[in-house]
Every structure is written in C-alpha cells, then in structure tokens.
Image (cartoon, rainbow, N blue to C red; front, side, top):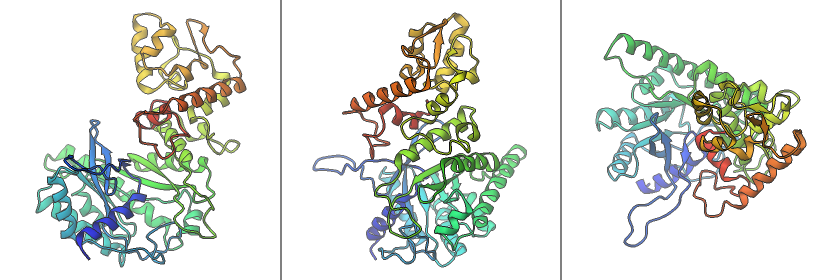
Length: 435
C-alpha cells in the first residue's frame, strides 16, 4: 500500500480520539495560495505557557484484535486497514515538521497481534525520532493497556505526555461494550505512569542529569452517551482519577453512532451538549474548588442541558445568594455564576483601593448577564427581577437565546458542530474556563 493511502486511512481513524483539540477547519489550498488547514490528521494541544502546538494526530495501525461494539476499528468491522512501520512514521513526522505543518506528534493505535507487540512498534518509532532524528518536538503517546511496564517505562523517557483511555465510567459498562477488555489492565498502567512521574520528579531534585519521565503528565479519555451511566457517576470518576493519579486532564468524548448493536443507544447524533456540560463541570472541579457531590448527587444525577453547571448549582442553592461582592472572600466569589478565576482575583485586588461599583465589575471581566442575578454591589441588587429560582432561570434562558441569535459572523469554532445550541459565551468558557 502507498504511504499516502496509509496516511489517509490512519489519520481519519484517529479522529475519534479526543485527548487533544481538533482544529475544526477544512480550508484547502487554492491556486496561488499558501498553506493548507485540511482537518485530517492535524490537531492542537497547548503548552504550559499557553502556546498552541499543531500536532500530527494519527494511529500507528487500525488493525485490532478486539471487537468493541462502539469502535469503528473493531475486528469485525469492514473498513480499510493499514499499518505503518516505525521508519514510515518517523519519515512522515520529520517531513511534516520540516514543511512547518506540525510542531509535534500525537500517536495512538489499535492493538495489533497483542499489546506488547503494538507497544514495541510505537516505542521504536518514538525512539528513532528522538535518538536518530534528534527530534525535540512535542510527543503525546497513547500507552497500550496490557503492555509490560518495562515497555511503558522506556517509552516514557522519550515522550512528553502519555495517556491511557479508561473508556467508560463503570466496569459494568466496559463489560457490556468491550467484553474482551479488563478494567484492571487500564488502571494498572495509569497507576504505574503516575508513580514513575513522581519518581522522576524526585530524581530530578537529587540528580541534575536524571531523565524526565513524561514531563507533561498523563491524561485519559472516557466516552459519554454510549452507556446508561449518568453525569454524577462520570464526574465522581473524574474527581477520583484527578486525586489518585494526578491527571493533567480527563477528556470526554461524546459517543459517535458508527454502528448499530442491541447494547448501543439508538441516537442520530452525538450528545455534544452533554459533553460540553461535563467539560464545564471539569473546570469547576479543577479550578473553582467544587467537588463532584456538590454539583450532582443522588437526587440530581444529570446536568441541566440548558444551563451551565455553575448556574445550575447556584439555582439549587439559591439560599446562598445574593452575595455582596465588596465583602465576599475569594472562595465565595468563585461560586458566583459569571465570576471566573481571573475576575475573582481582580475583584480581590481592586477592593484594596476602595469599594467597587456595579460598572466596575464589567471592567474586571465579570459576565454581568449571569452574575447580576446572584450579587449585590454596595448593598444594591441589580437583577431587576424577583430573587427566586423560576424567575432567574427564565431570564438566564432568555439571555442565552438572545446571545445565540447574535452569533452570526463570530469566529469561535471550537463547538461549531452545534452553533445553534450554545452561545458564544458558552463556547468561550470551554477555552478559558471562565464560568
């Protein structure tokens, strides 16, 4: 098979892995033009300093020994198959880099023959990139569950980030849709990578020449909407993974209906809005001091599709509001819908020089179309409606609808797959985390 044909097959097969952000663009080159932003095979990640890094996103192979009902690459599915050799993958990566198409590599794979065999091939590819080609770009490698720790440890010396897909929120769901996989074979490498990262940090403190083991940390991905698991179970799992393995990120992937099966839900489109709400809740866990039980519980097991999780929580705890912005501490400010991490810090800093007026809040980055219903400023309430759940929710929904109607011509494309469902503010919140 020609190398270009392999590239097309394996770049397309990688699009279902969301442990990075797709460019969302498909603008091809034209006569006398410069550049090409065709979406196939290109994704983006972000460095610690905020730089956006373009990555070659690709599978090493889509030949797979497993027959997971939800997966496009399952062994029983009749799709074009291809496998790179380590040298072919190295050649493609270096040539793309020299042409300034990419700055790094995102490498995942189906399981060819067995986990160790697949992991050895991927290890050989990243080893050659680093040692033979002196490639210093960013590399994100998907570890293969079931592979020996020895192979994972060796690979961790060459890559910046590793991840292991946990797939589903519960072992019951995994058995239902991927009966050949064991949850323990997924958790074990996650635990091993976490321990080796900690060990590497300690070694760096003692020895200047100690190697960096996965310096950008590890992530995971789970599928949303393929099983009956509710949002509360998903969020509790994410919270536990962050605490237990110090993950950098949990990625949520809305189930894409690529096949029909009695164990799969009958849906016509991925539950993208639900995925979006989980991402927003994830920000609240990591940066806003919330815990999973606060956001969802046994009596409220799923997020409101119409409202972001912070507004949803505030309406269920309306007795805590309104909050006086001139006296509330930092932790309480973060609980106010429309007040993000940056704006809360600005409020704390500005109050040292005097009391804040309502007009000052907009200058500090507070989203007043949400915050106004939950705050007072110098003792005055600016909501303009009764301080009750139904009135505030109705007004929030009206504001969101008006915002969507003004979205024509806006350039935010991260959630362009469903522009009529989310406002520009909602889309931006997924990038900035300001809720």
